[in-house]
Image (tube, rainbow, N blue to C red):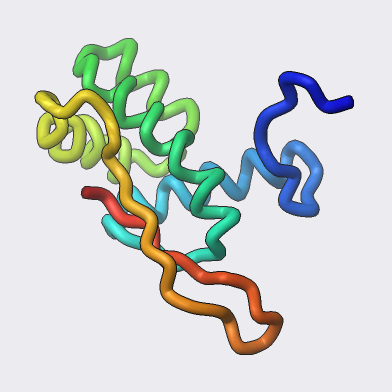
Amino acid sequence: MRHGRSGRKLNRNSSARTALARAQATALLREGRIQTTLTKAKELRPYVEKLITTAKGGDLHARRLVARDIHDNAVVRKVMDEVAPKYAERPGGYTRILRIGTRRGDGVTMALIELV
């Protein structure tokens, strides 16, 4: 039984899943919008939203917690100085997932995930 086990494996081991989440979160926060598979977008959404909520703290500790997952200093600076203040009054729901059809090669459902 799988009681209480959340998250998808995405055909990767745990370190590869962590690396994928960090890379996609960095790209999303840098660009504002990325195209990926629907399953990866659904896994990325809570990861990014928790980062933004942490960044809303605005202090040095929050910056270090965000920098623990985002290894690009320019993106950390952008999250702390631009993204978090933009959502200061918003209680959550910082991202939006839009389905954009299927991928031609294997038929997997593709999606755009973007910051609201």
